[in-house]
Image (tube, rainbow, N blue to C red; front, side, top):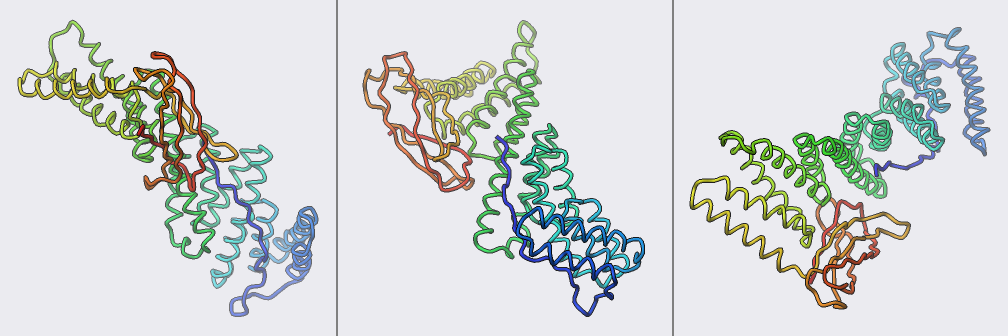
Length: 421
């Protein structure tokens, strides 16, 4: 699930009067508009606030024509246009103010930051109303006005992803990650700094999920090379996402099978053999990574075993054959030692925390035996952010039973792992 940054900023002040050192003179239009701006700031309801902004804008629009060389008209207009969700015009107005009076640079910078907040809130309102193209345009305007914060970028990433534009979504989330490490971070209070760190993790989770979605689409078309590259990118972005690593292993296996089946009945080909050896070596490594998180997964053990066995069959070197044979037997023994297997393990967000659920299959445990499982939820640094143990009664040998346990993590979830003590 692609997630957004849901923050609504409440503005307590609009900076409307530039400092004396660089201010141009007030005119009839700026004075009359300022009266409505004061009323807007004092308005008790959003409707009254919007009404006063729009009254100010009517006056300022007249000033844009009859007092067009007054930079203060354009500066005020930029702020008011942003307040009524007119992003493109706000950008043009600020640019015009700066063109007419370059000494307004500091004031324009302040007003653009204010306008960013206004347009961000406009974008969220449009998102809530399911006016998604409008929301996208507003948030894009916010970023054109003022860059360096992650919130609009994260929501743009969500909008792009939901519209099917994965490259733009990845760029937006990547830019959001960069923003959380940028110079504005140190200007935030401790609460907002913590939020930005959370936004960084949310963005990275989303980037990995987009790569994974690309991988799934490719896998369904038997485009295993493309799928493997996408799952690799997902697992590198989020190295604790067991599903990304598992799917990466499956894509490598699919690619190896496709290549191997294509050579059936044909003379040995050195290039194909080299390619298969590389694929099986990758499979061993990736399956091994997944087993660190999901040690009782039967499919992963089988993939690890097959990669060793097939490399044994590909080589003519007796020492190498023995080495691969030993590794295959070791994996077979590890698989055979499992009393139970876990499958379909997943973490689902709930109102009270995260639900860890899955299926336990009995391989050779005594029916009715208590099987203890210790689950750990991992953050992006790989450290535990939530732990919970549960006990599952073993069903009859060969049978399966579902399980579920609630965990309350203390941070953004990157992945999970478990052990059976």
